[in-house]
Length: 210
Image (spheres, rainbow, N blue to C red):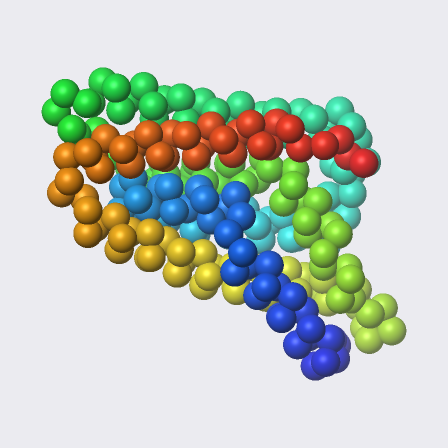
């Protein structure tokens, strides 16, 4: 059983990390601005589903296997980077094709979910984060290490679900106010595309397993 003092420390550290916009928040806000509130919330659900699986992997030691192999780390890293860049380039090309009528066919919520899930699952930085962050708050003297780690992972994902949803709602609300603007219709697609490409490049430049 985790002591309340340690639990409060974990919750405070997690909240501080979650309130600072990171790659996941950028992806969520870009998706929300591009296709609306529901698309943003579906992206949040997808990302947090992948986060929970990453937390389980860290708990079971599967992340250690990935992080101990330079080849495995690089394969996952470049797959994730390539997918993000592909989505970004496709978004930019679609914006060019749809510039004449200002409309782009909305992607299905199912497709949005699986895109967000794949993007986060193929991000080795997420695995590295859970592998390094969660054990800092685990005390072997207080009970089963696996149970403690899994509980902390679930709490972090639960908090992330709330904070990321707030970002999605904020981004979609701001977008709704200017959605009728013709220049915005074109600009928001460029914004989303450039965010995806930028995140892909950032992922590709992630350091080695060291």
